[in-house]
Structure formats: structure tokens, C-alpha cells
Image (cartoon, rainbow over all chains, first blue to last red):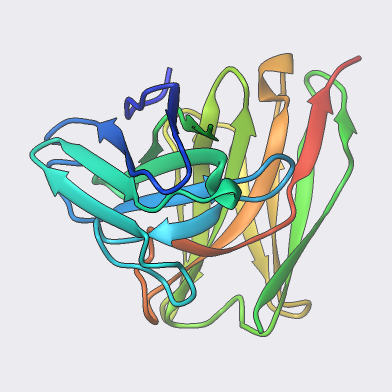
Length: 110
Length: 125
């Protein structure tokens, strides 16, 4: 059982927007702004998409955005494209030099 | 361009030690603005951070509570790499293991921007 809770699946049609939630507690998501989001295609390593709640690494399309409210972080993918179909994982610093991940969300582009 | 390349056996017997290595190119295992991590992924446990090593005038390690009694992460400055040792493995340790970099330059130590290719390790007799 993962420390952070994500919905198992999400879906949207091309061009639409979809939001994936990541719920933790005041000891992790709610307590720190070290929330990251990763995209993982089958058989590949995770790729950093968002860090520090809402910052995008160079090269990540601005269709990807992050936010946080209380103990819940969210990843929004706007203007869905076929290549966005992948698994998405959140992570959060949890204090005491420890990191926790979410269970992952499978995003399907219909 | 920073890259990391993992190596190690894909099959380990129960009660034995799992050993993996992550070779670094384009960066330094002893850099002052980086940390080097091991993460694993399995269907039952999802992604799980295992631990990290880093150098700040001396070497430090942090380990996840779930594996703290069984894990060792060691740097090897002569080869610019770091390793994972997990003792007394059981079938529950079967997973894909990744090494990854956390960097203060542009990101933070808890956002992993460089990942290894992953090594599937099966624990079986």
C-alpha cells in the first residue's frame, strides 16, 4: 500500500484536459513543497515532469501543470495528446530524509 | 550529458544478497550538489524509495525505514559509481530496481532528473 493515494485510472479525449490527484497527509504533501510528478511509459524509467509542486523541467511541455491544496497535489494535462498516454506517479518528501510515492495513475487517451 | 548505467544479476536466491551497481558519466558521485538514489518498483509495492548516498565534506547515507536493517549503499569514487546491497532477500524483494540522481542545480534533492534503465531482479530458488 503506497503512502500517497492516486486514482488507478484517468482518461480523456485528445485536446481535452485531465487532472490527476495525489492525496497524502500533513506529514508529506501538506507539510512540504517537495512534490514531484513522473511520467512512465511501459518498460521505461520514470521521467520527471513537475517538481516543487508546480515547476516544469526544461523540455517538458507547458501543457503539464501542477498545483497543491492542503494535503492534495494535482497534475493537470491540458490539450491531451496520444503520447501523453502513460502511467503517472507523484512523490513527496515526508520528513526525516524520507520520500514517499503514490500508487500511480494510468492515463488513457481515448 | 549526464547518464547512469546499471549493472548486476537479474536472479538472486532467497536469503542471499542482492547487489547492483550504477555507473555515472557526465557527473561525479562525490559532487556537492547531487545525491544518488536507489528506487524499486513492483506491482505489489509500486514505486519505493530505498535510500541515497551523498558527499558533503564526508559521506552520508539515508535509508528507508522498510529496508534500513538490510540495505547498504556505497560510493566508489575510483570508478565514479555507487552500489546497492540488499541482504537476506525474499521473494517480496522481486522488483525492477532503478538508480537515480537528485540535484540541487535547477531542481532539488528529492526530484529525480536522471534515471538508470532499470534492472529486473527476481528472487527465486
